[in-house]
Length: 91
Image (cartoon, rainbow, N blue to C red):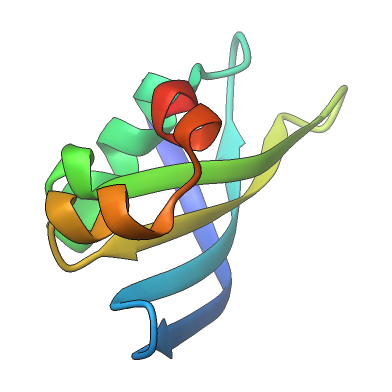
């Protein structure tokens, strides 16, 4: 699925060893799944999927866009240390 991304915020959080990104993804067809979004974002930013968590996804019905927030950690161990258990499962 092809998506166009517009990035609203890109901020480095050194204290928690992560990069925080707010984005809007524009798409055609059905609403993309979390896995599809994470896969496309990991290609765009070149990070391993196991070191990132998608949060706060909002689909805008009729507009073909999803707003969301992404946290990319330096590695999977940092993700395990800083993220709550339910967010790790929801990736």
